[in-house]
Structure formats: structure tokens, C-alpha cells
Amino acid sequence: MQKRITAFRRLGQHHLEQLSEHFHVDYFPELDSADDPAFREALREAHGLIGASLRITPELLDDAPNLEAIASISVGVDNYPVDELTRRDILLCNTPDVLTETTADTGFSLIMASARRVVELADFVKRGDWTESVGPAQFGSDVHGKTLGMVGFGRIGAAVARRGALGFGMKVLYSNASPKPDLERELGAQRREFDELLAEADFVCVTVPLTAETTHLFGAEQFARMKSSAIFVNIARGQVVDEPALIDALETGEIRAAGLDVFAKEPLPADSPLPRMANVVALPHIGSATVETRDAMAQRAVDNILRALSGERPISLVNDEAWTSRQG
Ligand code: NAP
Image (tube, rainbow, N blue to C red; front, side, top):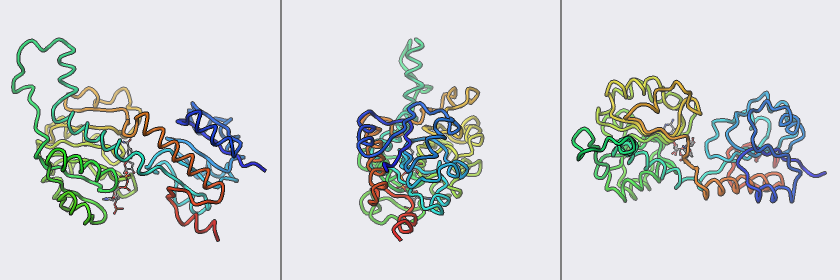
């Protein structure tokens, strides 16, 4: 019997054709919610699930008794109940590496845009307010030669730091679960306690995964520790930050500015003050959103699910235990 895949969002025609060569595919390109009845019906029969940006709950898994593998088109797996998937021997695959450099580009563009006030001053020109040479009221701050504090120093964190150290002569500090001696050698990076990094850095850039431990890692206390000239950049996940505390820190001048790709609630609610604040650059979660990288991510997810459903170890597997258990 041919295995079945339920696919949703972010797949191109060539990806679907590849999947269809091996499996029966039910595709939901515009899936709105996991409650969509046709999606739920397809899932009941599915051996594989592939897609992006959908919260998968244990209740949903109860309705998918044949599921063997999920291929997420993302590196972050905060939308998945990983332990529950492992308990059920369901493989969870993600897409690391292929999005690292693009997401680091987004991070660095937020560092630059926030420091040099690129969006605010481009709006100033668009409004027709550029009637004389700019003065101190429009001055930004330097990026080169400053201290970059990376909170999270994995693939993306290292790629942002590389841009800072090698391209902009920045001193790199990092706070991370484990030490990174190779990166210390490569970039001259220095490990700091979280609180020390906050006090020393001119730019604090967040690249930790969202976990129970990192939820609200940044709150009023952390913003209070930062320099009043500091710029906060978040390209990780919105829930790593207590957003009202960030808004407060930006409004009171406790920190100078923020560059944000991710938010507590996405899309940003219409009543959020963040996009209207002059010292905030807000992006619509575009970390990995380039033509090339989104295609590479979808392709990695396709490769993962093809392997997983053929009994081969997927390229990027999140829960090794489920693989071991399925082999046994
Ligand atoms: P990664 O290589 O796993 O790096 C994450 C780093 O965070 C690791 O070095 C890890 O330490 C560290 N870490 C984990 N928990 C920590 C904690 N409680 N305190 C301090 N450090 C901690 O992952 P990545 O590929 O760089 O991706 C990182 C995250 O970026 C993803 O999980 C995703 O949420 C986010 N992301 C966002 C976008 C976007 O569109 N904005 C795009 C891609 C990814 P160890 O090295 O010791 O394990």
C-alpha cells in the first residue's frame, strides 16, 4: 500500500512532484488552522506530515494514528510537543544549516538599521522632511568597533558574530548553554555570564531556541541591566522576551532601540505600539525569507520525509530516541 503524506504551506510544485513520485499527497497550500476538517481527515490516514508554522498538539496527534514522521520547514521546533512525539515514536525533522546565513543576514540588517536609524530616516525623506542638512537629532551610532553580545551561540549566533567580528571589527561576547572554544579561537569571542554580557554589550542579539528555560529570558530586570545606549535585536522567537517590559524599556529610554523580527504574537496585533515607535525596526518574521533559502528549506524537508518514510535516517532529525526506538 502506498504511504500517504499530508502537506501544507510553503511547498513548490517541484517539491510536490517529488513527493508524489513516491507517496499519495494531500496538499493544503493555504491551510488556515489545524481545525480545517479536510486537513484533519487527511491527517487521519497520513504516515507523514510536512509543512511550516502550525502548532501541533497531542490532541491533534491522537487523530493521526498512522503518523511515522513530521518534517517541519523550519529549524525551530517550538511548535511541536517533542517529548510527546518521541513517546509515540514519531520522527521529528527540521531544517538547520540551510537557513543559517540568511537568518544571520537578517540579524545583521537589524543591527545596522537600528543603529543607523535607516527605516526612521528613510521615512523622514519620504515624508518630505529633509529640508536642510541633518543634525544631531538624526545622528545614529556606530556599529564597527562596538561590542556585540550574542545570547545563544549556535549556528545562527556564530554566523551573526562572524559578520560582526570579521566585517565590522566588533568585539564579540557570548552567553550560551555550553562553551564554544572553536569560536573563541576563530573570532576572539569571550564567554560571559548572562548578566555580565547584558551590562557590557552595545548590541545584544538573541538567537536561543524557544524552550521552557528561555521563555521570558528577557524581562524588566534584564533590560535594566543593559546600557542606556544599547540596541536589542531579536531574531529568535518573540516569547523569549516579555514584550510589555521591552516596550517599557524602549519608551523610558532604559535602552536605546530595538530591531525585531519576531514577536510574542504573530502577525503583530493592530494595537501593538511597536511598529509605531521611532526607535523600533519591526520586520514580519523574515529571518529565512529569501527565494533561495525558502526553497532550500522546503527541499530539506522533502528529503527528510522521503527518507523517514523509506526507513532511512533523515538528514536532520530532532529526536534521535524515536529513531532508535523505531529501529528496535
Ligand atoms: P542552534 O544551532 O541549536 O543554536 C542555539 C544555541 O542556543 C545553542 O548554541 C544552544 O547551546 C543555545 N542555548 C539553548 N538553550 C539555551 C539557554 N537556555 N541559555 C543559553 N543558551 C542556550 O540553533 P540555530 O540554528 O542557531 O537557531 C536558533 C533559533 O533561531 C531557532 O531555534 C529558531 O527559533 C530561531 N530562528 C529564527 C528565524 C527567524 O526567521 N527569525 C530563522 C531561523 C531560526 P548549546 O550549543 O550548548 O546547545
